[in-house]
Length: 394
Length: 140
Image (cartoon, rainbow over all chains, first blue to last red; front, side, top):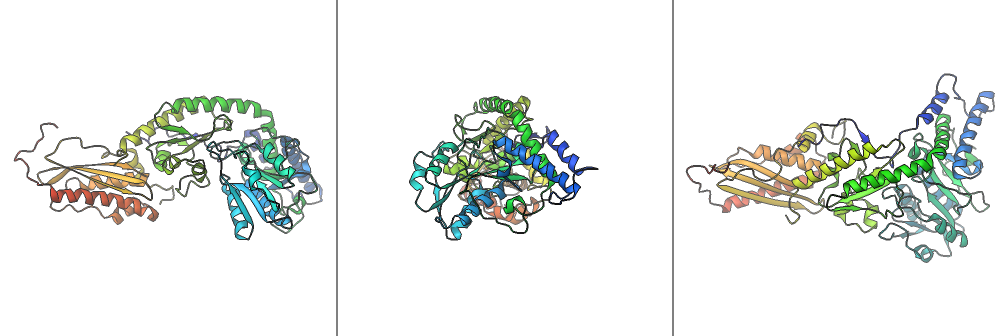
């Protein structure tokens, strides 16, 4: 049986790792980079600089509209990893006088886990909360972890591996009632799920453009316009971005980010409805195989992600056998390690199921035909690898 | 490791078309099996050999493991076939890893192959290689 040589064209179902830029985003960036483009430094006061400034402020307004907040609450960064670092380390430093206790979950992205780990090494105390088997933060767990010296709570909105959606409204309310700053990593939800921050008790929120058909290399940190929401900068060297993130703004990336935000506002409702259909179609197709398990609660998960584990199949071999289907084994950020996903292990999956997990994630261009291809490829790969495997007792 | 990615072309070929995967296709006067596992990676290997007139006529594998282990098992079985049982030299793991560009951190799981082969050879010591004068090919 030849697994790899036919169907040479790729089918891309790894949109939780990154998405192809929308053609209108590309056009917006080309208008900046091409002949006669708005190349000038937006901090310059001459006419060319003012044009760039106008363009970046228009983009900031577009991102702000997507979140229903004021433009001045948006600070551009290089992406969600930087936003998370800036929010977590910046808030911890700024609020060290209040206390040196922090709270987060074990299922956060490494861009949150590692800044917290770094702070732990610097003397802060961190409470790491375990999820329930459905991936959600258990009721009462956060309140039980809170202390008088808690300075910051960070809980992600949509999990990057399972798509589990946390109740950030309830978490934020609890934090606000105790005067604790609440940060949310929304890298997987911004531009994909409605986020009305005017009505949500979120103080700091990280997002990135490339997860919703914008360019790579640009993101933002939202800071609520409230007197107690202050963070310390991590970098120094200029007054840009309210002195929180110095450095010349990449005008073409900012322009692409703004256009991606506008497109998301236009398309979000339709995109979500399509993702639900694609998710159902894929699960129906692959769950007919025996020994297939869905990771995360489908009732509450973001429909753009479907994470499944297979019994008696080795994860790395499965990933290769699925080619030219492009999917993720665990999250793309830690798939190089070969370790079973720490997120799935935190959900109670044993190592054998966690290591066989495949994450399918959909984007604006995903078609039903792509799902049908994925179903066929997955079923074939599972059968092939199981046929090659020794009996479980061997 | 190649510039094109983590798998060299031989690994891709062996993984996609593992000619020696599965069970023995014929019956042999002497049939042996060796098993081994690596708890760290969860890898498991079963090797089966069919011996006729003192020669490994057919060697097959079953593997639960990564693509490198699958490819290594395929190469191993291919190499072992045709060898005499009186000189059953296995390919050196280091040679196999060089041939397939297997990352050094995977050495543990590739050694499972050697363990399975050694387990198989131990049975050879116990099995009397007293074969009929005519090979049993009636079921081929």
